[in-house]
Image (spheres, rainbow, N blue to C red):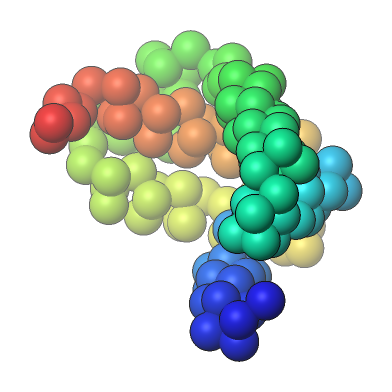
Length: 138
């Protein structure tokens, strides 16, 4: 495998680790990623019959995994009330309210794990709602 490709893969993995994007990954996700890289290797060396199915299987795993993620299950009104924000709150307002509240209710500060989970769920619900409402450029 060319050194430039290995460096690019290492840089991407380092960036994902540094930004925390690897936190939600499972062992199976790692296997799928390795299978995709192996598929690239096979495809670039002329063994398309081996490479393409590996890459397709990994892509299907990613689609399956994305669909499997649990969506927030807290009503939006309850989330707004818990964080103390109104309908006009921006993403920064939601994050600030979450940061202030989680600092008080976190188990490390004497709060309960259940309440910290609810505060995190409220933030996730409002961020997801904001993403659904915001039109995307196409």
